[in-house]
Amino acid sequence: MAVNSPTTARIIKALGIFGGVKVLTILCSILRNKLVALWVGPIGVGLITLFNSTMDLISTSTQLNLPQSAVREISQAGKDNPAGKPMLITVTHRLSLILGLAGALLTCLLAPLLSEWTFGDSSHTVDFYLLSVMPLLSALAAGEWAILQATDKLQKLARCNLYAALTASAFAIAAFYFFRIAAVIPVLLSFSTANYVYARLASEREKNTPVLTFKETFRQGKGMLSLGILMTVSMAASLAASYIFVAWLNRTESAATVGAYQAGYTLMNSYVGLIFSAISMEYFPRISAFCKYPRRQEVMVSHEMKIALLLLLPVTVIFVCCREIIVDLLYSAEFRSITPYLGIGICGVAFRAASWCLAYTIVARGDGKIYIFTESSSAALYLIFNIFFYTRYSFAGLGIAYICWFGAYFAICYAVYRLRYKMNLSPASALLMLVTPLTGIGCLLLTTAIGNWWTLALAFPPTAWIAYRKIAR
Image (cartoon, rainbow, N blue to C red; front, side, top):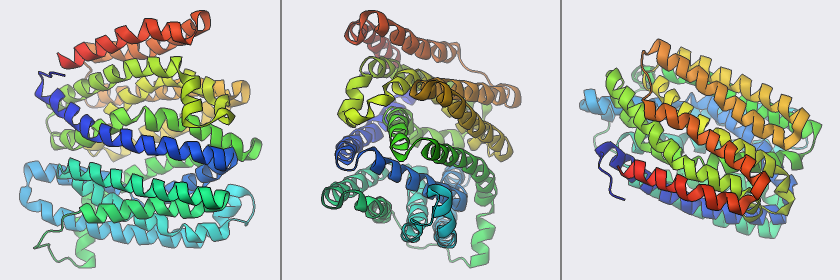
């Protein structure tokens, strides 16, 4: 593809690096999820979801969002004060260790309560003791990843993620084959361990690193921690909402229902979301470096949003028309109950991509209190919409809830973007924000009239051609 815009070329390069890695890791995930679904079924997937939700909540609460705030601080130093970068890198290493140890200690202290809150009894207390190492390994790995991202070592970061995924997936497949559901805890630990080991191998230690005392580490890292604490409150609210919902779903339905829900959510947010998660590796450091230049930021946000939405246009068509095949391929026939969730919810991914672009502006500006407001609002909307629509329409209701959730979240982010920062979206980005979800809804309605394959044949070629032409121009 011949790309004329240097910014677009940079985005496509980042997408090529991380998109390629994501595709390979997704292939590992497809194989792993397929085998897990066959060997341990929805109950095993549900257990993994419940443990992961709990540990993610603890990791997010104790890491104080250090990785994201570190990327922001190091990126800005690279533009405004290059001499200060080594100090910030050392501070990131030190704080990652301190916060990781705090997360491990908190997990041990709360293990009996976590088992009671999550499963309704104390039968999994020992499991949480074993999982207490996860917050430590997660914090150390995230600190290394943040440094690689902020210093533009994207290829190293991509290889690190790939090797970790391959190693952990190989272990997971072998463990589930031999031990079935008993392998859940070792497999969860293997992913955290692999992430840390490869992140540590990829890191570059400065020869003349600054020597800092405990007190100096916190003094130098005050900027990171101040923003990080505010962001942690908002992110913890999001994870708490997710935890509450899956715990509610587990108690009102079953662990198998939780596993089915998580399978659908993963398909939309991990597999489709690889497009803008790959782009963000380049986007966030760049927008952070220019946070003092609002007109530059405005152009960056509109351009990033346009590229993400154009890429999602044909992907949305594929997911709507091939949802049954995708579920059977990536999971198994036991998970077909999620096809209404996937078919309807995918129409809301465009709102998620658009709001994602706007939300990064808030983080890049260090506007922590506003970020608390937007993310806490998002968490509340997620919980309210999911429970309300699920109780009425089951998995189809979760798809409707997904659209309503991110549609409302986009409106909140755009209000902040427009009213607080006095910036606006380009006409092309605004138009695509409407066209992409409407295309998905139109395809969904068309499949009920003429079938999936005819709809795919009619809708995919023009949407793929539009995306190609607009990006290449």
